Length: 242
Ligand code: SAH
Image (cartoon, rainbow, N blue to C red):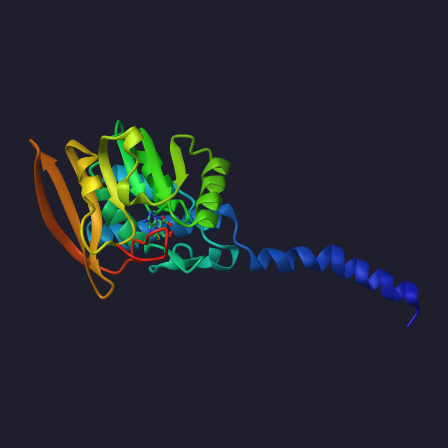
């Protein structure tokens, strides 16, 4: 075949065919918005999440931008996803449930232990005044900080380090959310909880964890089990677990 004809054919293929192929592969922002709406209805509202502020935050935060590119299409599905470094982003329903029990009104200072992808922190950023979040795995902390910055979550502050002792400099916190599981509730976190504050935390060994809601009223701590869960363990800087 004449080389010029071949070149012309390739040009035609490149100009007319490639864009439509790409369009079939990738979803648009409005496709993702639809998926978010469906996620909120079928995974959250139908299961009893009814705080309208929480539902609105989950419709707003672009979860697909917090997961690795190869999982973007699955970002709104009803299960956790890998985020690298052997860690996972929680199932959307668990994010909704944990957020709802904190009963945020908008004025609070919140502490999160286990930044991971930064998704839960972004949801909290929509619902509270200030969010402080700690991640022990440096590459995850750095990536989450960048994602949050690119999406303008300027009220969310990411620190890299061991969250077991909390972040005393900014305590007390009106709400604390822990997204990795220690075998016992860390006392430093209980101490950093404000009077009238609420803490949600998965507690227990790998195969036997419960989500616990802890409240502090007149200095008295009350604990309530919510549901059985499965989170990654809370780790120490030397690689051990709490
Ligand atoms: N909330 C996250 C998911 C958390 S997965 C999200 O929305 O994506 C649990 C995270 O806790 C992991 O990233 C893990 O590295 C982190 N982690 C484990 N032990 C920790 C500790 N002692 N201090 C801070 N982060 C810890």
